[in-house]
Length: 115
Length: 113
Image (cartoon, rainbow over all chains, first blue to last red; front, side, top):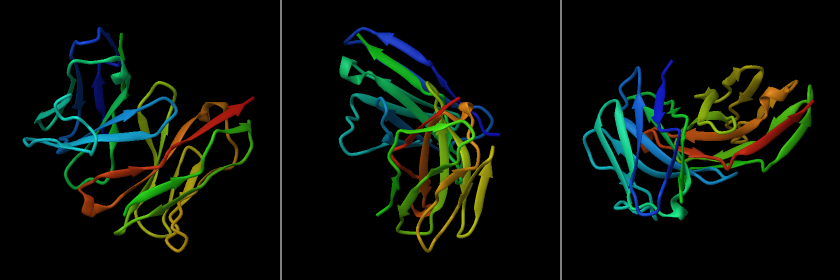
């Protein structure tokens, strides 16, 4: 079946640095990718929707300059947390779907800890 | 609008007990309905889905029936195991929203031996 690989699974960084998280669809072309943030014991919060070759659409309240999303190819989307601060510590999950498909495939998530 | 209301947890059951996690929805169009499961420290995995009224999704002993008249998609399992301990998310997708999914708040299930 469809597989989405997310990397890194865990990352620890110092405050003020930037961190990039990659999301790859391994065996299908992902025309749309979604980025979520999940706080402990809470549901998924949709951050942004990215379509290949176009700018991401951010949800209300999500800072586009802080959470940079790039979807340069049909198999890769990246989320860069710029100038990270401790409050950005969270579990970030990507998901992908192919054109016409009505199923989301999720990555395993990335645990970001900002010291 | 589109939304999912899910039974609040946490839920704790003994092994082999019967499980029901309630889920109801509102949708502007004709939704597809899903249950996703999240094991500790992992992403979400599709557990089952149903795309039209009266469809029953099933997988690993779990079942859910798409009930349009009650706008519900309750998850059931006849005999839970310790390995079923996880967080379960009900979700819907409406085709006119470009594959955007709407998730419930999640229900944490712990099964004790």
